[in-house]
Length: 398
Image (cartoon, rainbow, N blue to C red; front, side, top):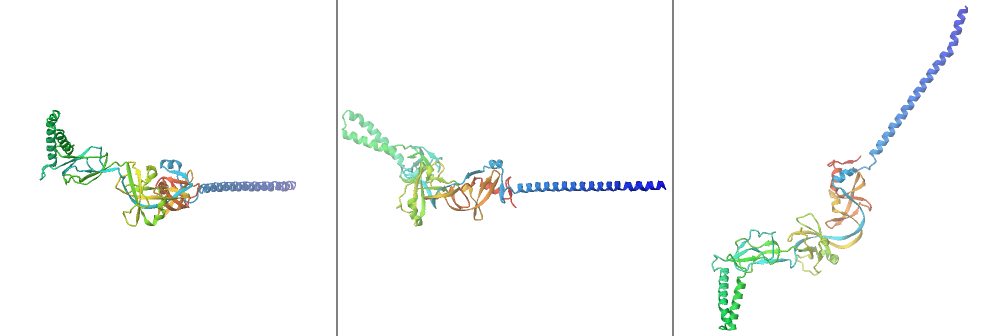
């Protein structure tokens, strides 16, 4: 019996210990679970923070931005400049023609009648020195006689007569009058035969320059004095601009122009070619309804006389304009755009409205602001980068 009571007491005494161990285990389990939840919440918060950072990085450039690294920009020749305001002149766009300047060209004529035989080098575009020959004109084998041969015979006979009478004159056997007559006959024959050869009379260049026109075919018969070719120094040229009469009020303000020859995409500025307006307001119009405006300028070797040109007459100045190079403006379906550099790796496409242009620059009436860094060279490359990744740049759009 005593042993039974001892066992019961021992079991009862052990209960608090068991419950205490159970509670400690539960407490430990709960603490561990709470720590794990805290760690999970911390990791989730960190991941969300990283996602937010990534999202911010993805949106660091505005929608529509064109990313193009500085290395690529250098490789493709991208150039920019700050937009400023300055004076831009009224522009009147007309048609015109380039011509040799007065006194800068000459016509080569035949000195005698006959068939023309041209030098193989006598073609349009060839250059000749003053006094050089383009060929000759000969009447040999032509019915009616060879004028060159007649001149030669006359010259030889006059020379012989002068040689015969000269010693007689010195011995006072013939009179002064007879000697003078013989000398005059010789001089005339010499002038008529001067520079002639057995082949015929040479076709001589009166000035040094370039052949711009040839009027006859090789072997063609010409009369004495007939034009054979035209030669031009091309040192000075003349630009004729045909301005419609409706712009007559602006004529007084026009002092210079730029022009683009029909064979070239390059616009030439008369101010850079030492050009000046030469015509008066009363110049006679070759075409009814138009006023011819003439400018004379120095040829830089790149302008061909006789060709037509697109002319931009420059009139009164207008201050405070935003102006861009033509190379900065692109066109898409009748609308005009430029590209502005936002930072070292980012460009934005900007829609603009435009005004007049002078063949080299164009007025931008809206869409650009002072201080914008405008792409002036390579705009087409940026455009390609924006369109389907034609070059190694890409567009970041959403």
